[in-house]
Length: 465
Ligand SMILES: Cc1cc2nc3c(=O)[nH]c(=O)nc-3n(C[C@H](O)[C@H](O)[C@H](O)COP(=O)(O)OP(=O)(O)OC[C@H]3O[C@@H](n4cnc5c(N)ncnc54)[C@H](O)[C@@H]3O)c2cc1C
Image 1: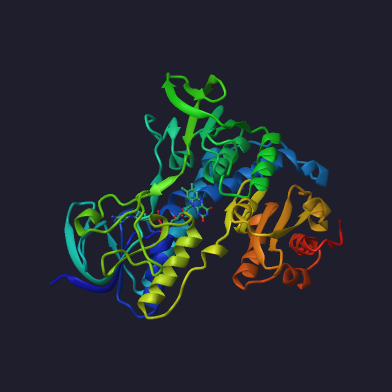
Image 2: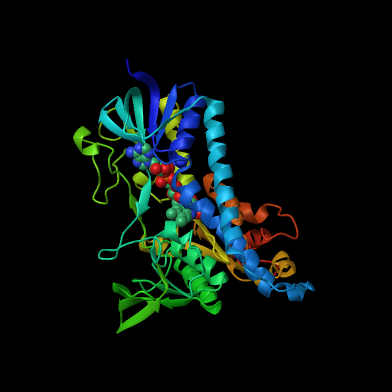
């Protein structure tokens, strides 16, 4: 007799492992199928966590080399030990992925090691690395198989010289010149890591602006700061091909003019696409949309009864916290609750220096939808805490609906923007007005006072500017 579960989840990334833990908490007999040797998916193994570990270490390296003199701190010779930096990153990853294993044991979630395939509604076949298969039965199947890097046609990733984000997180030396194809957040974050460690970085982007999903004013400001730090940008430029010689790569570029660019390493970071290979979706008849994403309704149900999908493999932003929110919502819906995800209150953060963070609508979206809005802006140069810290780059921008004053979007570029955005997300979740933020007492001296001032500025009454 095959093992029988209430809920079987395929994929143990943030969508899958969070859904598994919540389902188990709700009393479901739960299993999670994962083929990778460790839990946590893209995020913990090759995404958010290793990239942030390297951003943190490389920032410390850059800071030690540049910034401390004005604080009266004299630093001796600063040298890079890349092996130790990578070792620390790997240790952070291992600690966190083992943490998920612990949480599975604590909540009695079975980790079924191997590749999962849906044989039929209610039936999953798990094939281990040794080729042995096991069939299990499930009342509900959740697909949380995530995403993979989108390849660039005609360019082969070898993860040594032409790398995806995965290879770029594990280079064994600092390249003299790194070319990043794609001006999205992954390319800019990883470009920042290697630039801080000494690489000359050029970003090639086919559009005429970077970070296309962000409010345009923030993208422009970010590009300006990164350019000032030495990062080069070739916008409106397409990579037509890469010539490989033993000592260097030559990129053929098409833009306003044809040109070529040499590099030691090329990072292809043009986006991510849903990963559904080997799941058996065609045989079972699970419908995909034109982008290869699994089609789901508001309750994450596919067109086949008993089969659900969450995370990067369905529509919406490909972000850890979005996948995790969907995991919780779906588990609770399976238990008869009415949980839903507010897609208008999902923050997005770029962990460059300065950080960029946003929630809700951009100015471009409001203009396109002909929504009337007011703007409140406040620069960090006028924020006392930013002054004491010595990081005054950037501003907070709040967009509020004209008649109602309801907060429609908040966009921050500046120090710790990724942490500051939490207040704005809460404001959106509670349907707050700019006035609500403006009337909220903020501790002094904190960076968060810039949010209060930007909210006051919506009504033209900021105090400190
Ligand atoms: C370099 C990089 C940096 C990132 N930084 C951030 C960030 O700072 N913040 C943020 O919010 N997001 C970030 N992301 C995105 C984030 O990692 C993803 O949005 C998130 O991991 C999606 O979660 P998921 O559960 O949908 O899928 P995934 O995390 O991709 O997990 C899917 C899992 O399913 C497994 N799997 C697939 N098919 C099968 C099968 N048939 N059988 C068994 N197992 C299977 C895979 O092995 C994988 O472990 C980053 C991504 C990258 C690449």
